[in-house]
Each structure stands twice: as structure tokens, then as C-alpha cells.
Image (cartoon, rainbow, N blue to C red; front, side, top):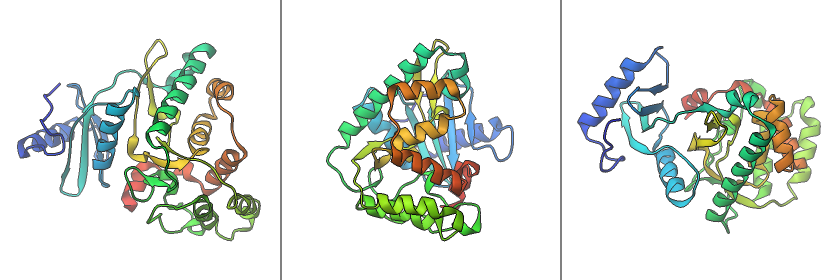
Amino acid sequence: MQPAATDPFAPSAAAIEEVFEQFEQAKTTPLQMCVDLGDGRFVKCRFASLRREAEALQFVRANTTIPVPSVLLVFQREDKWYLVMETIGGTTLSLHCKNMSTTQLVEIANTLKEYMYQLENLGAHRCIMGSWLKGPFSNVFFALARHYRFKVPLPTDEYNNMADFHRYWVQRLGDHPQCDFLRDALSKEVLSEDKVVLSHGDLNVSNIMVSADGHILSVLDWDTFGWYPAFWEPMSMWRGGRWRTEWLNALETVFKQTDMGTTYITVLDFLGTDYFTSDDFDDLL
């Protein structure tokens, strides 16, 4: 692995060009945005800034026991940002869970629950919802839907309370008649309260790297890091893993899905964000 710069946020011009050349050579398709350089470095490329994700990785690494990749470099070159991290071995939980026992999966779920508690303790006593450290959410779920009837502006500011948060999603649903029951459910939730917690924001099976013997090696993709309603993280875990019966059974053992979480799974499904990739999201920013 190449040595890290003294300050990963201020790499030299030579370091930037070296990474860029290696990245371009290692790509297997012209549009590839994530590349393993094969020397212990992994590069993530986006049109949107990756500086906040790099800062989040360093913050989580310094203040919790959550395993995350080391940040080696982050920089902008022309119209793209590049985040260079240490390569993490293993396999995503999405691919490996079918090979794991129930006991192993429950242990994974309990470990993730402990990670969530650690983050919650770091971000205590906050009511405003949005990205860490500040600003509107940077999360694919808040992106514009592909279908014209669901197009509303991306969040441009933080949410001061739960009522504002729910109203945003009512707006996303628009006036389509098939959404009546969801709008009614969210309109009732406007008057409800939920604790605001610091969360990863998308703790699904594709963002968990595990070893062959079933232990968590790393949690990836911290661009979604921020303050969310307490129901959000378990909801994203259930939604992201629902096609994997083994994982759902483990989640049912460790987490309690709330009515609000179930409602939001339906909302997100109706909006069609399953078909909206993170690269599409970057193109909008």
C-alpha cells in the first residue's frame, strides 16, 4: 500500500496525479466509479463532494469502536471528487448471509445495534435533522424520483422538527390517488414525536463487510451520516435486507420494527427509489 499523506485533505499535486493515473488504468469500464487499485488502496469517485464522507470516517474511527476504512487521500480533480481509502477484505453481508448460521446473523445484528448506540451517544441532545456536521440530508432516499409525478426539490435545509420531516414526504407523494392512504398515515404522524439520533443513515446489508467466519470487518458508505428520526436506521436495515429471509429473521430477534418504520418502507417503495442509484443521485447535485 502506498504511504498516506501527512494531511489526507491536502495531498500534493504529484499524489493526486498518481492516484488519478492508477484509477484510470484500473477501471474496467469507462463509467466505473469505484476501483480497487490492487495495492491496498480503494478509490471512490463522485461528482458530488466526498470531503464530508472522509471527515465522517475519521470522526467515527476516532470516537467509536465501529470498524471503518482509513482515509488516505481526498481531493477534487476537475469536476470529480476522489476518496482514497484502505482496501477492506471480506464480502458484503448481502452476498455472505446465505452462508451464515442463525447464531452468526443474530450476533451481527446485535453488533450493529451496539454501533447504533455508540453513534446515538455521540449525537445526543439534538432536535434538528440533517447531515453531519450540518446541512440538508445527503441520502439517496431524498433524491428526486424518476417518475415526473413524484418530482419535488431536494431538501435544501435541515428539518427543525418531526412535523417538517413528515411533510417533506407528503410533498414527495404528491396528489396521486394511489398515495391517499400513505398521505393519511404521514399526516397523522406529523403530530407524533420521535427521538432524533445520530445514525449511519443506510445501514443495509450492502454496506456491511464481513469475514469468512461471520464477523464484521467494516461499515462502508458514510456519505449518509447524519441526524435522523430513531425509526429510520432500523427501517433502512429491514428494507435493505427484506429479500434475505435469514437476515430478516435475525433482525426480528434483535430489533422491533415500528409502525412508522413500516409506513416509510411503503413510502419509499411507492416512490421507486429501488431504481435510483447513488450515481444518479450524484448527477443531481
